[in-house]
Image (cartoon, rainbow, N blue to C red; front, side, top):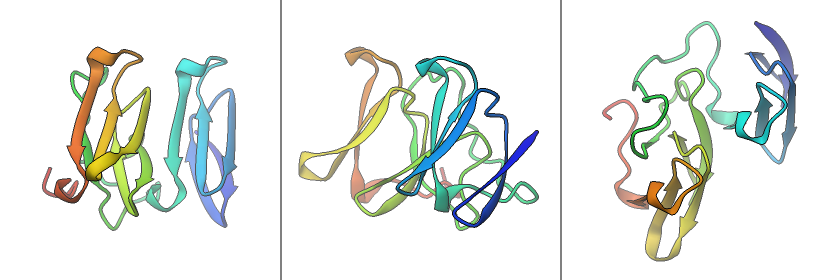
Amino acid sequence: VESAVFYGQGLCHNCRHYISSYAGEISCFTENSSDAKYKFFSNAVPSCDSAPSEPSFPTPPTNGIVCKASTSGCPLGVESAVIDGQVLCHNCRSSISSYADGKILCFAENSSDAKYKFVSNEVPSCDSA
């Protein structure tokens, strides 16, 4: 496991190819490929010593999963983002974004068949997901 410091926070990571930060988001490339890019919101990255292990996100995703980050962050390796002011853990590998009428769009794959919608104010806490 390698380490880096971003936003005054020490991080352990497996970003073998490249790791960078911009505007509160940390980008991690595990390989030299855009398919191997993972994004993490800096405030949702857990401590390596006390990272939550639940919920368990399926890999590869069988469906879109979105939940509100716990106070200790997202489980290790689970991507995170800030949508509509909420820090969210998710498996939206292709993209996640805010959509009209308070909805969140999650693309688990680069395909319209892998599109999932969530109502922003009804997203459960990861502690109860």
